[in-house]
Length: 117
Image 1: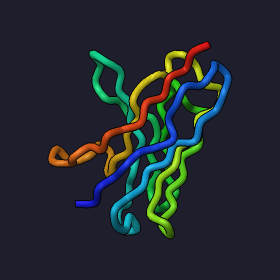
Image 2: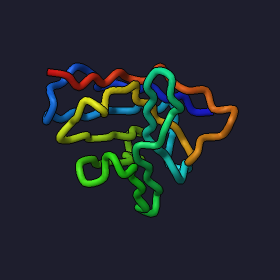
Image 3: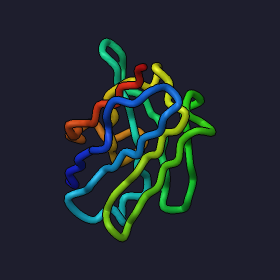
């Protein structure tokens, strides 16, 4: 199973932008669907955005129109750009294969995004 490590989070002011990166330990070419998920304390992890090799995109209503997800098969990374960040975007962000990921997928450490003035 490919291992995924997220990076790029941080503290940003409302209205700012961040680019999150997900680096895979091996090839992601054969993984048709990959997604970004986020979780806040006390809540279930939720889908933020997903992408397929065929270019199908899905976005949560809360981020549609202000986020871009890209799957880079050549360098085995998945990125998420979040624009016009809002306090409610504060969460730990994770990447995973599948939508939803299989029950035996081992989640990475995630990357913390905090939106605050």
